[in-house]
Length: 145
Image (cartoon, helix red, strand yellow):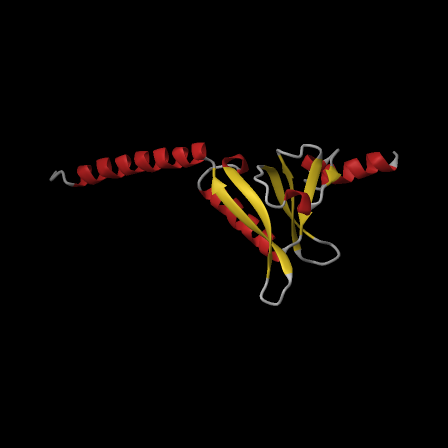
């Protein structure tokens, strides 16, 4: 087994098979662009001991990206939890990485995100159906027998 096969085996065995065959991209190339994240995983860095986000985007099919920015990783985790709670997927979001400066002058990444119109419509429809179910249940409680 050559080094390429060994690397492939390690990547696939780590649960990060989605990055197999892709080159590492630079986060800066995503700055201020609307992107769609296709897959994302959170991993702990062996060297720094902090959480990183590794992901692929629809707009750059040959690349994977990694960020260790505490703020960006935290925001991606919050988005992942919200998507899971509402039974949505990353394809339902438009994501944008931006670089901002702290009051001390340090630059860091932040995430801006919005629901795609079709995902927003899906949520509105679910909410309507949920409200209709609540109305029916409330009406049944009024029956005196």
